[in-house]
Image 1 (cartoon, rainbow, N blue to C red):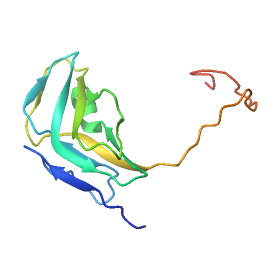
Image 2 (cartoon, one colour; image 1 turned 60 degrees about the horizontal axis):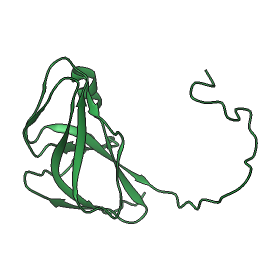
Image 3 (cartoon, rainbow, N blue to C red; image 1 turned 90 degrees about the vertical axis):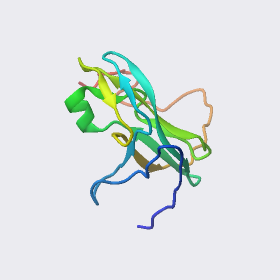
Image 4 (tube, rainbow, N blue to C red; image 1 turned 180 degrees about the vertical axis):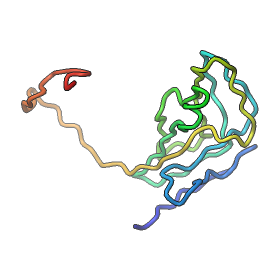
Length: 143
């Protein structure tokens, strides 16, 4: 499978995102600043990077499972989306459901970037939709 090139601009305090193993889906994002995320609160944390994504590709900012399991820390709008036409700094909205303040130091791995190809879609207005067994059954409808 051919790799797509994503240009990464390092800003103040930024580190190049990196996979931790050859089979990792995500590239770890590191904090570019020192801060504290208090219990029951959230904070926007700088990563010190900006991306140039090719058309048809998005970057998803996702939580790291280890931070969630050990500290109750995750990505509030996860997955967050970085669009191909965005050139600003990638930032992570961390939340803390833990009981203790979560200290962030520059270089700490706080989230991960997963890249995904997009399918071109055209929305077509209509008056009726085809029927299914589920129909309009909502959240939890299938058990």
